[in-house]
Picture 1: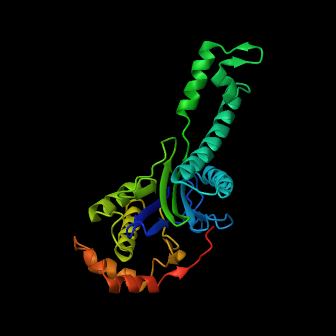
Picture 2 (picture 1 turned 135 degrees about the horizontal axis):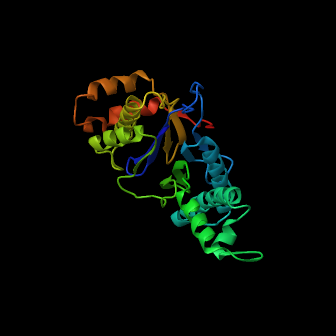
Picture 3 (picture 1 turned 90 degrees about the vertical axis):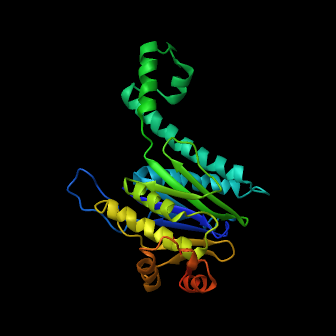
Length: 288
């Protein structure tokens, strides 16, 4: 039960990501853990140093998918020229690899060692797969939920990217409005808040950070038991690279209070707010 928010702003000159740090254990007596990292950085991969992945879902699955993405990005970094399609294909390949591995396990447990390959061929080593068993095995695969969502954003060779993957759905990467939210029921409140503000790729850094902050707070109010506070907001700038911003900074609290009852936040798209917020950014964090 997480909240993850990603927006592309400043005319595609920056990416802002927000994640809470609470891990909850539904249907158990275990207290939530408020110190769980849900963002990772690929700073060990040349040309992918300024790319961040925010995840939501079952932590074990998200961790494995993130690991596979690392492997695919590592391969991709050797290419002379990396195009947007290459990155999309790498993310999809990583997601598909982990999905197939888990479907293999579902089939082996429920159908005495049946594999995805055998299901696709419709035959076992000793002969054809029984039609009834074949139909039931396919139903198991279709019913399996892939409990992982991710937002990947940043810059590769100076080019902006922001993608969202949710379960078995196709990867999303629309250039406008370039606003994505992942997580539990709180994500509806977050997206409603972002839509209310009309957040889009053309809004400036200061204005967009306020909108992300408002959305994160709206999600937490909607689901206070399972959504905690973010440790920081990640800001990836085309030139400066990865930075972070403390959500508890007095300036952000002041803006939140000042604009709470105002429909228009365009006054933040000015030189002074931009300078103020940039002065608070801490450059080059190591996210885990």
